[in-house]
Length: 231
Image (cartoon, rainbow, N blue to C red; front, side):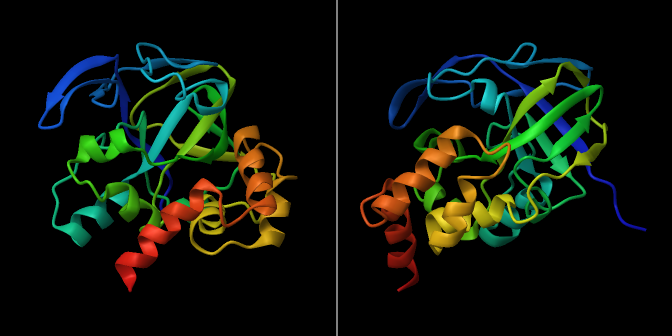
């Protein structure tokens, strides 16, 4: 019997002033776990607020990371990462990221959400984990996590099932988008991204830009870092 996908943990947080070896910074990436039902609005979870203006928004109301990823990271790097370590709102178990496609309509608790695109790993994420190479590793291993937009508000909590109600893009898995944009650019796939229902407009814009100037697009720099390590 196939394992059912479910919410393994839920996290919310507010901007905090943080201090580490690099100095003082402000972020919401240190979120706290909650096992109580949480209201879900079009802007995200009640009690959760992003810090940087380029985070969040309707197309990235909820951030999801996979329990499968944590198992991989801990085995690969001998780490002890636990759910919530990368600052996600939801840790999803019983499913792998290649089973998640942009545009998917999913019932989570009483809320209806839609997969909107991959998460882009950033410097604050590397700082949270404590590995300067974390962005590079995340791209190389193609384990980014992803974002959800909210189609119908409701409530969710730990233990709720991830129930796929509708799939709009058969070829639009999260790893396939990452692979095209970072690791092995495929112009045909990039052109298909422009037509994918549910894919966040920002990602369509990036695909269009890369089609026009693939060698100077910002994703090319990330690919070069990965290639240098593998040589």
